[in-house]
Figure 1 (cartoon, rainbow, N blue to C red):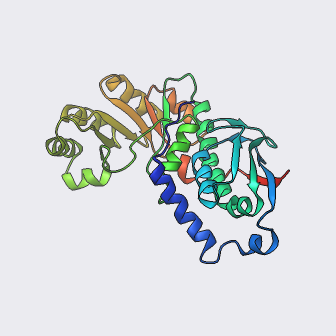
Figure 2: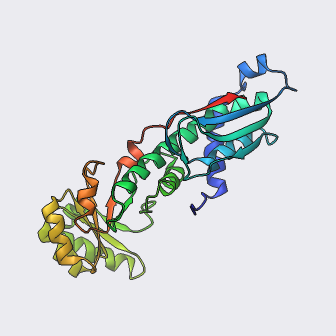
Length: 282
């Protein structure tokens, strides 16, 4: 699986803040007090539940920043499936340093693997329909780059990363412009032809208006299955049609089968359960 890396500087900054938070000014008092500086060890990172691995880049950065003498052999990479009990990585080197890095590395791996695991479940649920599942901006503050990388590891599609990526006109923008079509026209006049414009609609009768105004993507917010099918019949191939709003694992297949192109799911990042991984001495 080809998963683009997050720029090293971004990951380094996130990890540095994490380690500052964990180590404070005095470091790992327990490991300093109980483990000799010369002690070497071998440890395995293993899954305690089934899931999809993500967060390798962040974990590697943790080990590197704590002690570049820590050696890591990954047996599974981002996007790889893990069964409970499977070893994801073997660490060797200074035991004190490995245990100092343990929690920070596992926090990244657990959180990001949880995102990848949930995304994989959604992607599997709509397999064969032609639709893709995409993330939203409902991410953990400061961790968006890593969480969206985890969505990719799980088989999800990229969406807008930030507010400067594209225009996405939502209901409050529409309200301030006295209409969806007018909001699209203002956006096109402001941004020019090189910027993609998407708009959210919550009624079927808005669809023709926003397409005529120049929208290239239309988010069909909380549409019924019947109205999704009507929207697809009216506009498939003219614009990208995205279903959004309250999507669950129980409903996503039926939504995909209406013929929409994209299904955006905030739960991929805001409701993913941490995948339980642990580190144990070998």
